Length: 113
Length: 113
Image 1 (spheres, each protein chain N blue to C red):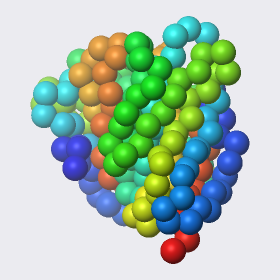
Image 2: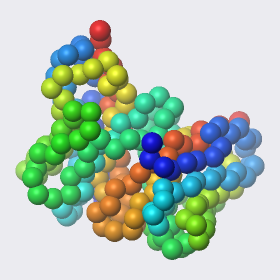
Image 3: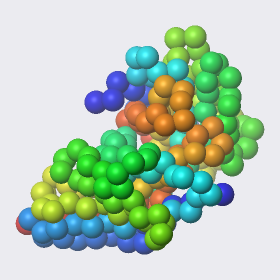
């Protein structure tokens, strides 16, 4: 157990809808990252938040957005869902430093129909 | 840009046999390297990490990995595999934009009784 929790566990949406996924960081961690893991692939970095601001982003369009709250919990929002957005979404928390380890939550499985 | 290659998509070993999972990385500076394990439907669990110093690192569950700069490799090893080791294994390199992790495509390990 890493202390990182995510909700919901599973979610089914239809194309064009919007979705919000939630993450609660491990106690003491001030940085959260989100990753997308398509079936049969490794996770891909979406973005990272530190002190409630985005401070790093992977190759994902603006319809992927996020929030980090003062208690270090976080949300991932995806607008205008596409079929290819079906994936396992993982959040990871850590203390902001160059060498700190990221600890992952169990993920949210999103299915877009 | 950083990248990770795991050449073996699937590996099957007999219980009690030794294991080596290959990982090759591309990164412009001194890499931070990680091995994570993922059981079906689960998040990622950190097995071990390399930041600096001794190139042979020990991890949990009896795993170890060796960093070889000349070969740009960070192979994972275990002397005797247990049936519970069956899972997907991901190698990752850290750094770059937001200190993100870049993952390989994973190696699925199956263990024969």
